[in-house]
Image (tube, rainbow, N blue to C red; front, side, top):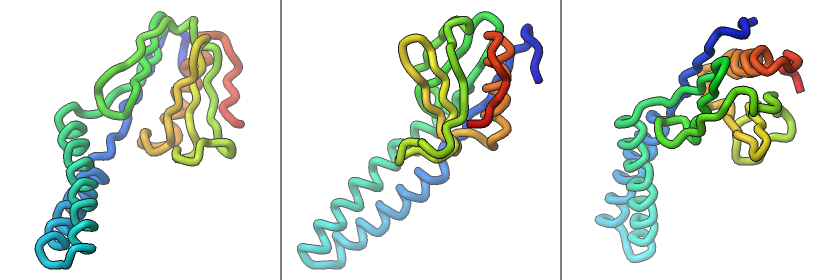
Length: 156
């Protein structure tokens, strides 16, 4: 459990490996299909080339920018918009209204459990695969609870 004066910082995991493998497979298989097959195979190859190029761009971006960090301090909290560095919201810690793990009612396109941090205006979702472990999600919940005076129950 963290004290109220402590700043907790958790570095998020980027998906560099997934983007790199997807780019490599998409570009290699797409080029093979475009060069070696008939019209239908060539169309599939162009689709794979586009998919591989998309993942190549994201691989370059995540490699160049590095991982973002979710920081909860006594005065301010930094909430990144994605797992790699980029836009982030810097809010007063007192404006956070709730932090909890969403296990069973997670959105279909997010890995469960999803860390939900609510403010007065919106909710920030951080899926499990953005963290090295579930313990990092719990550290953020406990830090927000200790700074805002909320209950420290992270089960839902």
